[in-house]
Length: 341
Image 1 (cartoon, rainbow, N blue to C red):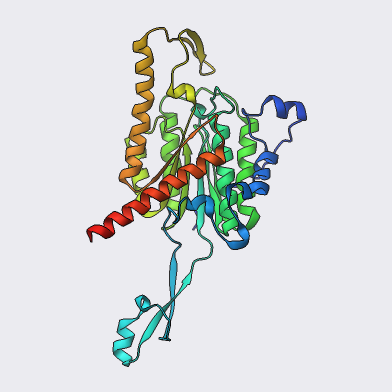
Image 2: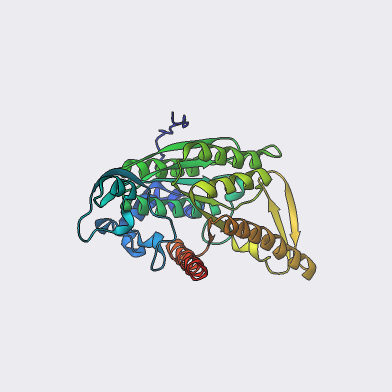
């Protein structure tokens, strides 16, 4: 039985032109997310040929092939691939026979989108939450173009919405509706200590239960407050599924602002960030680099794709570059293994 219970069907409020322009970069709008599907040619995704160039990166796809199910055994015919020979039937009948497989046409693709408080932050162009939604839309439309079924989880400290993978436009549109609605209704709250880490664990636990082996899982997060249990769940996902982690960050998280005093707030508590001291600046940058490298090493050790996304740069370009790097790295790994063997 599918574990998903909540099926968000709340209509998405339509923003007025003034609201749309004033909050662009702070909120995502349904028409923008839908518009992504009309411009997939800009990122080399062509549904007509069933290719998936955006996700393929280099010459070969960085992802494992789709699952195949055994269908039947038939007699060998000249030109058949001998690697598919069914040797047991061949030995029993004394005639060469071949295994025939049926390709799985619709692979489940899950978009796991972090919508916690820390994602609603940004200093250039867009909030991290907006980048996450836009990147999920790009990859969702790309998956739809390939014929895959799209679903996922959008989670925050207080709740989460779970979407069963569906084929056709229904799958991608259900995701876009949820992303747009949550963005338009977001309000700063005051979660209790530990709620953020619990939200991550609950989302990962849901995906572990829902996704069947071989699913493709895209994870969009800033990876703040990921505790040891969350990292263990991520390892489990990587062991049974194709997982790509999108590490989303704002440039001011990476590099401290110029020397000065900056008022900061989380919506409730207030403080001042002083960046006059070089020691403060170095410690600031080191804190980010430590988190970044920890996530990157974890992903690399588990065969999980790692793609960084910064909020002020063009999203499709970053995705294409990230997948090219993944494709090149995995091609190099295959070549290295072949050379050793």
